[in-house]
Image (cartoon, rainbow, N blue to C red; front, side, top):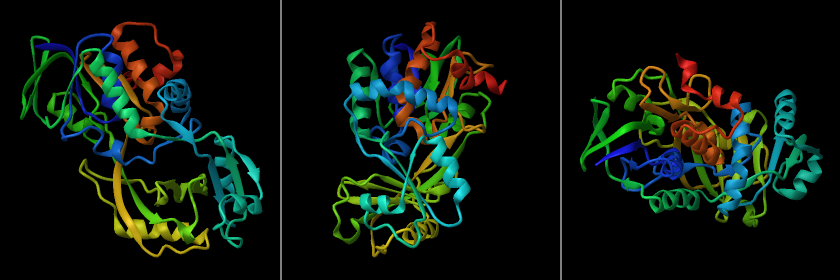
Length: 357
């Protein structure tokens, strides 16, 4: 069978695209791994903070809020920004960009009792941040896609791609897959897929981010604590299943691969976290890493390639993929379905692949 759309990649980008494109035409989605959302999408900090990111991303995140609430994947978390003696400028810039309310260090300690009285000299809080149940969201998108007739094939790594007489053929170990339009939603591998298809890469960079899970500090019940981050995004910490996940928030370029945490970078990030609290990190329960992939201008790329219109980019969602997924996918379906776009024209233009002509 020759489908209308063949989506390469089964992370949050691919499954959200499948859920929307299935209403436009026949869809086949292939994923290299044996289950969906294995790489970056399965290793996300999973927060919906619609003020996070550059302006076009903020617009797409805000436009996604209603769909995320309707999917019942959000739960209250909150956001706490912490500053020390030497990061006043970074603190004030982030306080403003996130639309946060300044609170006293004492008020911050009332929320998170392990904060250091000596080190934390300024704080700000916002309640407009929610946890995202990422697995539930991925499965919701996949179910919606299948209910509309989409086919999802896992364990099907693309080994070759060719285009003949207006039809793309993707060779996988599960056979050859065909479609009239190829949608590249391959995460860290998007430029590799483009090369395989004979399309010019756009210069995406996968950036590693490491994470550690630590026991709840001092035996505290952390379930009601907000997500905390140090000014300048020097580190962040977030409650997770009775423990804390702590990240150095690094952005180290890496080749596409199954990422793992860098022990030295992780230790440095944990040290920055420890400077702001009174409870030392005694041991790690687990550690891991993911690759957040960005275009050169750090905006998503959504739409047809300017030189190969039946090759479509749905990539570069970076650290914003889950919180902007519904609006991103709706925009993609609008563009490929020939419908009026549901977001402002300047937003669609800002994320268009045409900017790389």
